[in-house]
Image (cartoon, rainbow, N blue to C red; front, side, top):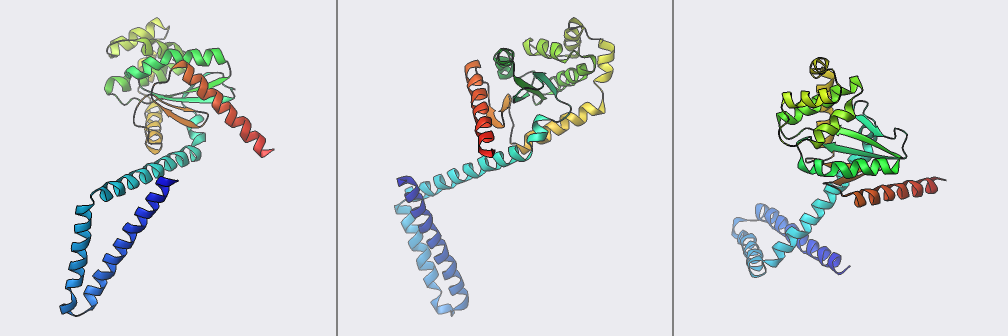
Length: 262
């Protein structure tokens, strides 16, 4: 409360100073020329005060920064709420885990992202151990052409019912993801590689990736991995225990929401 009172007082002082400066500017334009120095005198007084008390400027910047951060968080929450159906049910992202699960985890990931690879075992173990999680895999290739190639291959593998096999192979892979290596992983996963190469050129895949890029931009997601767990954004690599805790919290929110509506 002390900080909020200080911020309010600072805001008031700055507002009064600005109003006074604007008022003097108008006064200067409407009064005779000989009275013009009043504005200059006031401006010098304000300048002198700020030079003598530079901490005021720093405090004002801090207040503005906190306010802008709060506004940015509110925009993110509004975007999440307004686009939740698209986030969880876009119609083209692969759904793993339990399709009828009571909690949905959405993951924005890149096959060349080391943090995505680090999170992968914990994520899949959490989903398997829980048994009631619906996992939506958002292909979000942002780390170059090899990332795009890998994502296109994974999405194309859905047609042959081998998405999770190829996805797992590429998430566990180390090093580059050239066409030859991707096709090698695909062959090991039991895919028809000739058909896969053709399906990778699909305009539907291009449209789906574009839609994911647009969605990520709207949600201010610019890195991987990024998780949305039960409607809450959780960026960055998440250890297994934290993943379980976030799932439990999501279930609690859902239960509280149902209780409130009954």
